[in-house]
Image 1: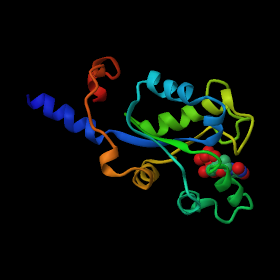
Image 2 (image 1 turned 90 degrees about the vertical axis):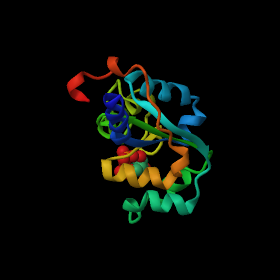
Image 3 (image 1 turned 120 degrees about the horizontal axis):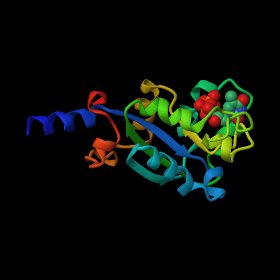
Image 4 (image 1 turned 30 degrees about the vertical axis):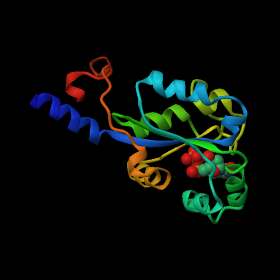
Length: 166
Ligand code: TYD
């Protein structure tokens, strides 16, 4: 019983990260493909919804790029269709998800990464992923309310991690 409580607590403190499936991902029919990759990797989906982003929200989300000439262009590109926002959980989830997405420029992203396999563009690069644990916490709070993130045990746990990784 004590062990189960410990495991449950551990699951709660595992890293969570934000992924946004961009309008180009929806337009190109890649939703299932991208989600499938994260699932097969062993990440746990603990929040997902379709939403139409606003200029205000995107100005906050891309604030680090506000001085760039392409700021309006990237905000506009994120409002062409709704997007799908997801929360993925796992050990080192932020870095794992980011490396699965690949570098920003799809033309330079290596084959095997999401951007490397599906994108020929810097802007139309299929997914947004959080770039650090701190940013992930801020971004998840930006796009999800507390009751939209679900904590539940996955029973395949023993086949995902070694004892000493938990
Ligand atoms: P950024 O946060 O730098 O990259 P990443 O998405 O890899 O974390 O940039 C946010 C988005 O802005 C990026 O996914 C695509 C777009 N962008 C451009 O269109 N041109 C650029 O020169 C850069 C740097 C980004």
